[in-house]
Image 1 (cartoon, rainbow, N blue to C red):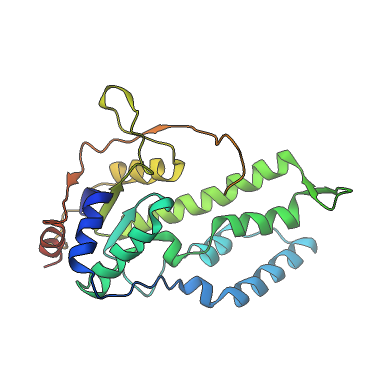
Image 2: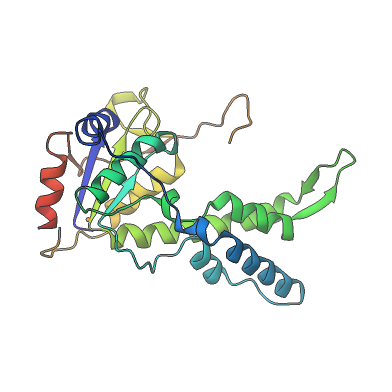
Length: 246
C-alpha cells in the first residue's frame, strides 16, 4: 500500500454522473463462473472429512477468497455493501476508462455466508425440527464462524497490502452520523477491520502509484481512525490517482 484516501459517496456519485454517461456497468464475478466446480470440490472436501480427514482451512480460503490472482489490482475500495451499486459503477469507470483496476471483494470473491452455510450444514447440525427446520450446535457454530471469519480477514489483509491505493467511501451506510465529539464510528465490523488494517500496514516507499431478519437490528459500533486519509473529491479523484499511477 502506497497511499490512503477517503471520499464521500456524494462525491462518488457526482464523479459517476460526469464521467459515466454512456458506459454500462457490469459486475462480473469470476467466482460465479466456477461455482459448480467449487461446489463439487466442497462436496469432496466434506466427504473426505467424514472419512477422517482434517479440513484444510488454507485450501478453503484459497477457494473462496483467493489472493494469488492473475488480475493485479491497483485500488482497494472499502465501502458499505448497501452502496454496492455506486461502488460497482465507480469500479467500472476507474478500470475500463482510466485503466485503474479496483478490488471490490464481492465482485471478485465468493460469499462468506455461502461458505458458512455449507460448513454449518455439514458440521454443526444438531437436530431436525418437526416443522422441517434445523437446529444447530451453538458451540460448534461459534467455532466454525471464527474460522471462516479468520479466513476472510487474512485474505482482506493480503489484498489491502497488495493494492497500491486504499480508498474508503464514506456514506450514511458506512459511518454513523450520530457519533459524539466528532468521532467517526461504523456499525460494520468489516469496515472497522479494513480501516484498522490500512492504518497498521506500513506505507511502502516506492516509485509505484495503493440479511435480513431481525426487527431490531443489532448495532455494535467501532471507531474509525481516518485522520491519516487524504480526502478526495469528484474533481481531483482521477488526477490524483493517475498521478500515483504514472
